Image (cartoon, rainbow, N blue to C red):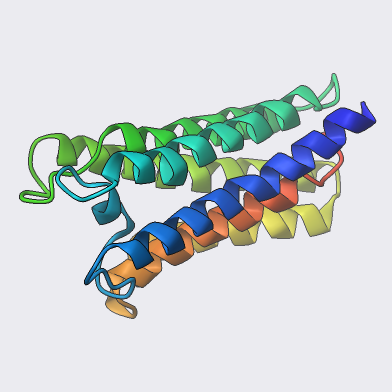
Length: 200
């Protein structure tokens, strides 16, 4: 059990680290790429050098690691855990799968909003909705067992992802809000891997 706990915690951190390292490394290797001006997915668009490798290490691998955390946390729920907790971790698993799917549905650099690029956008939207809904459900589950600090953390994650993914574009460049939404999700993922399972 202790070995499984350590593995879960390490994976929670590794998911975000893999994404951040891929974004920084592949971004630096692509001439003219500016993080403040271009979306993350452009590095994995068809026709861009090293796109397949970026999609693997920035989307697919972190998504699979996130799925491992969601499955592990759901498995650690107490036998009497409520529907909100079970639903929350199921939605977290859906968010992880949707995140990985973004790497399997790359944009077309010549027409980002056409063809397969639309499916990439659907995967992005599904990730955002499922992430926010998962954190909100887990906040409710934590409140039910009077774990107020855990509830606050889940709620902050839900609001952060929601605001950054869709509502902050008027105040900040879209390229940065997208990166901050991903950062908020990965930070939440790393934190929940350390929370002992109870009713949440």
